[in-house]
Length: 490
Image (cartoon, rainbow, N blue to C red):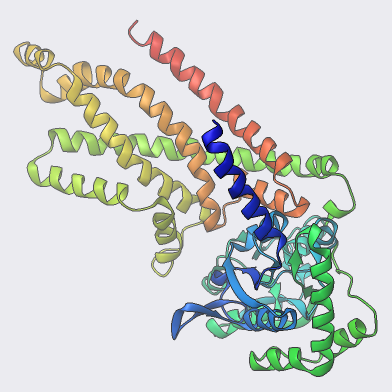
């Protein structure tokens, strides 16, 4: 033990010394998947990133006498990563909110945006405000100011929020008619309309927000330095020059900069309820939504498993009893499904086939999960069918049973007993894999939990609640399957 003590002590001393010394880099976190004008891979050189946030990071690094270094972090994980200290500052279109201020060191706002509605050009006259969209589906991003605004009017106007993982598909789905409007900030809305000529932005602002930088709570001193740099850049025009280069400068910014440089601040328009109440109060409010999402997960999993069982049995039977061309074709199909990610299959079914057939999100999720698991179920059933002793099949033939009678009366019942345990395991796995369908706008249990966690700034209680609900759904199923398996021989 002593042989390892000295090297380990040296490693710890070196590590702590390195952390204590000022870094020559400004590590800034962002999500390059967000795209222009925020952060995106440079089309001319994908090894580097470009965007107005990249230039803001360079401005801050210059002011601190450091070199900027980009750290890729998923947008929904920026808050948690900032709190962990994975980077020095997060810059990726991060919106100001009271909840964020309560748990992180937040910079002064450096850009003001407006939340606006985007609709199809044909609907521009009748869908001008959220009140006009009563009972309609309105797309947005989860855990954003726009999402908070939709929740605030959901009960009053009956608007149905539809959350997406990115800001591209809300506008493409609006063009296809899957949703009736999109509510996001004007920076994203301008880009969405540019990509989809059949859409228009309504001029009236639904809300006003601001982009800020986020740092770990213990980095308040660095936050204050950043604020000083931003104020000086507001006065000398460097920030204005950045936003003009990216065609984002407008009449709202001078008023914001005047308030900031005169000693004022910009208070978030919509305050998250998590900032003004305890975590337990937030949990009580979110519990009905979590229970509803758990019901969606369970229903989707049950229907998908039923489809997987039917398709899997048909595929296995075809591979065992079918002619050679059928066997080869089905084998190729199984390998194709098993060899590609479920996430990709969901994207293809929902988004890729949209120009041919526009499937509802729930149906697309059902088909995606059912088809994917059918490939795995077919392998289980094929193995179980082939595990039935050959002597029993020969005896059935001697007794004059046809092939179908042998399958139905001799082979299938024994194969089902052998396949029951792995089938149960697959159902539990499918229940957990149903969390992937959130990418095609189905708000199941894990997605609702992530929204809950983002709004209160912690995964501890939401994670525990989510785990308890998954266990409550999966454990009774496993127990029932074990009892059925034990009683099957009788």
